[in-house]
Length: 451
Image (tube, rainbow, N blue to C red; front, side, top):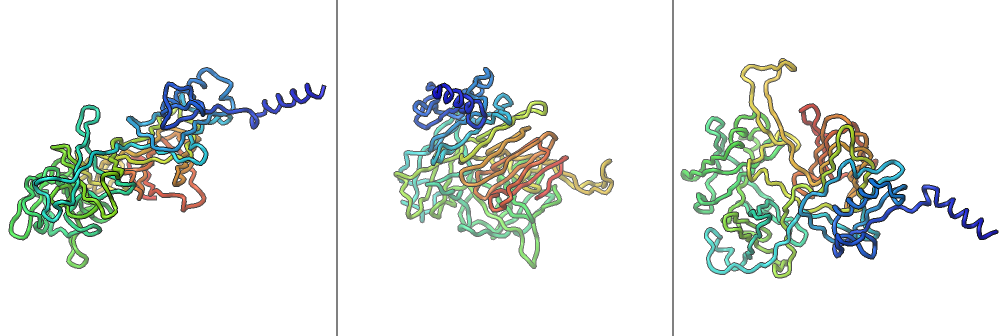
């Protein structure tokens, strides 16, 4: 009789939500997507784990009645495409989905490609400074998806390396003048010899509250000065937009700049240069780096996680916890330049109105249209979702129903941004401000502001 009572009591406990077992799906870098997804036989990818949970929910499996946990073991998960979450991946208030690190583990979702096969440069490389002879290493960059692999960032042993530039690390030069009519800039003549064959040369300039990147089309040296001509569309946008403009001041100095992305600039430890014509990557290692066993990673993806719902069916009750996001790139500056208006939003077109005023604002003098950079994590129309990363808390995100967007950038340089959110109504921010590592830049109704 006592045994029967105990069994009935145990069954009652199982019927209480807090005591009911939740579904568990395990993922490991040593797993296989042909496995069942148990702790003993884990899957290999988060994508397949999401599919498994999605199917359990579709079939109303009892195991997800009180929730589902996807556990990622430690290690780097190199992605070939962004992890895609859709409305069908949604949980409920009673049955949320948790995507989290396994206990005491640190999983990393990475958009990077590991580069190996390094050798010291042998022979002569056109343009390489004589002082760098015998110090630079080289490797072949693979083709990905049948196309040349291009990137703008590089990590060596977990540290972001410096793209070769014409000034010592931490310093910049000053422009001489800017000609808006000719869409050109005058700078002191570079002391690196002939740069006319420097394919991919770029000009980085600080102007007021923003920094811009322009691809150099041509350089004409005249005595101790050089005139720079730029590719379109950034040439026109840079010279036509009123603000932020290049700073010209005898009192405080003109805008600071540097030139980058030429093998002629590869003269300091920690610098690299990618020759996209030969698909060779050159690196000048630091004193404590050994390229024979160093971990060198270049970003391939621009987005790691894409959470996409709709107005009627938002993604809901999905939480990320304890997972790091690393190694994403952003190639738009290499293809169209980057002339930002504010908070990283780049200008698609901008100019001063000859006759002020629009139907909405009669006194408007300047007009601009902006685009939004991609981000490592992109969220569109979601509710009751959140991201608590391995190194920081981003925040839980609730109740997005109207049109709008968040885009954030981070000093950790996941690249153009760590999180982009579209379609929000309100967001909850942590009470401890030191948990925030991002600079937030909301855009509403076509206008941008810094918060």
